[in-house]
Length: 421
Image (tube, rainbow, N blue to C red):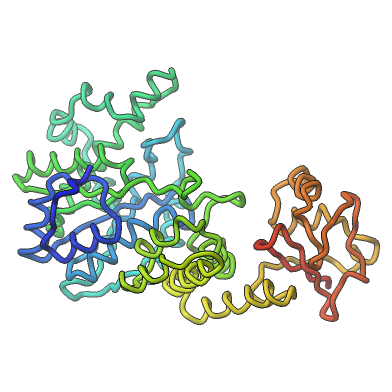
């Protein structure tokens, strides 16, 4: 844990402390001196296990942004090599093995997000993206074992939380997964050699892997490297940050529309607004303090400011304005809006009576018919603003607006538009 009495002098650490990013640092004073006396160069790594990153990755992306804002150089490490193994950290079972084609496709899907948060180029502080497959893919296994395997002890590795828990629960922990920690540590050494990287940023679940890397840099390169982790983010109600009923909050627009992304932030719990404003926006701290002090219904103004700022950063100001306007139209007027998630239904199905339950599942507002029935029983399911009381209810032509649309809602904040064609 970070020392509460520590007073950072560098702009980088001062910002990270003030905005709530700090959980663990390998050497606070040493890192502060490094960040103060020269241009800090840091990296964060991302395995390509999906075609998009999600909100859970956003903390480390924002840390790279803070680094660049403070005059440092961010390195984005794509795990083209380590994805072939899959990070076992904090996982109860092995990840599925992806082909090289699947990994490359995922990397292509992920890349564009970083350009929204970081400035890339050839300048001293411009961000650089690298792929660890460039060196891991060329490793001679026997040489690697001889040079680096001898520096890792099984005694220490089995004490890491994930390994220990799997063994205690008699769950398989494969030799393939066991190698992941070695390869991630070696990434740090390779990045130090190639780009003079001396700091790794990550979540608290990565602490063991990060400290393996700092230790390997010391033993192999005689370099003092640093590790920095953020706390595991949970909402005020104890839910892991970014987890929703509808699944992960993806950063790619094709998986999570700007409107849905805006709504995710707009639906932040009251107690989390100040924390999320500090972590996920560039709003100055004095402005955040004003928003954080709002009480009662006025807290919604702070949530809207959070949603506007977070959505602008990822999708652009125009998309944020459209999402804001669409939400205002839905909530204030009870009408459909262009920014709302929508789905199509054949007019012939509407004319014959389209099942409301099928509509909620097709819209994505519910995962199953059973979930829709529970919402109906609870009085939370609505059609065009009217509460649905009958599970057998259907949507007919009389329920369509003049533009052949109808609005489905769960509660007051989740809506979707049906379009008949």
